[in-house]
Image 1: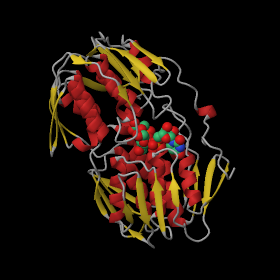
Image 2 (image 1 turned 90 degrees about the vertical axis):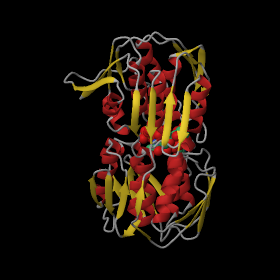
Image 3 (image 1 turned 180 degrees about the horizontal axis):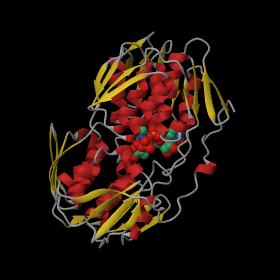
Image 4 (image 1 turned 45 degrees about the horizontal axis):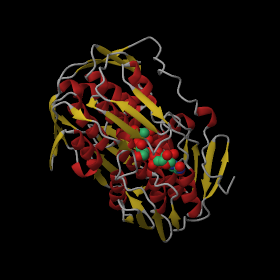
Length: 447
Ligand SMILES: CC(=O)N[C@H]1[C@@H](OP(=O)(O)OP(=O)(O)OC[C@H]2O[C@@H](n3ccc(=O)[nH]c3=O)[C@H](O)[C@@H]2O)O[C@H](CO)[C@@H](O)[C@@H]1O
Ligand SMILES: C=C(OP(=O)(O)O)C(=O)O
């Protein structure tokens, strides 16, 4: 076990390079299971715990994987199993993304039910609705979901009740090998969906419209390995942008794609942060005081929920009161309790948090309750009086490559220490979601 120790007070300056996107590489690795011929080569696959986890899932299915210097090679020509066991799906929800590819390729799949987690219940009804529409028979038993098809999946028109990123990806991957045309309506539009579609097309698929609300997939008989470079991680980039702004620094975020960060850039500019963009990255400079702004998270191209916690840290250092409204996940304010331990004044009212700016943050022992909460606490630690200790680092390691090293190279006083003591509990016990996760918002027809 480890902790990050942060000593506040340093302005960040210099240049930092963004790694490949976690939320792209995970579905891309899962999609590699569709390659019946040849090997896929994935460049800029970031060395994250989540990447290791999904690789283990693929290996357990019989794929051959090598991973060296951020290049992953996946040979799925001879996969033998169609099951993703509990030990991996429990560790990372995105393991569920192997369901679509396995169903399409093997005609049968058995995946452990992904439970709810800290940020919300996260049902999978839209994934299953899509698979059913494509002709799969779905059953549930002993904590596993099983899907089977008689022959081949059949193209269908699927309207998603929520523009779910994971459901769009899972259905899109399954549909690549279906007979006929599949149309996904109210599809998610995230850049990671476009990256996945580009990867699938490189494998020989016919996916059109990714990045819009309507995706059309014409099924093909077979897919093959391909070579692909993962897009830069817009959430990691946004996190460094906030790090620059919160410390009143001057940082060039190399690799950040401004088009992917529209709402983050706009909100930071509204606050008074200076943002200059070019084709290679984004420069962020800030002179305090910054102005308070209101934020509402929405599916892309709205403000990303994955930047909400980090932005809240920045708002704590602005002048005035901000309202942060979380509309994507129902329990994504757990960082608030931890911020309060650092002397922050924030009041949660339903889906909104009212943030009082001008906080005189003080270092404290805090706990990362989820990935972005962890990043946000580190950001707050950068401008707190004294020392902040952030435990729960396993959450942070899921999504940030060398976060402490990268911040430290920009001048932050941050390092990681090993600890033997038990991991610190979050400030208030999180809502006990694990016991009562309603996996299906709508009762599925097949139960
Ligand atoms: C690995 C990955 O890419 N993770 C991202 C992905 O997660 P993920 O794909 O899990 O998120 P979704 O877009 O599916 O979830 C968005 C909302 O839809 C709901 N929902 C989802 C599926 C479903 O079948 N039924 C349903 O009701 C969820 O509970 C949530 O309230 O998108 C989220 C929203 O941008 C991001 O925060 C995550 O970082
Ligand atoms: C919620 C996130 O990821 P995941 O869907 O993998 O839990 C995230 O990246 O902030």
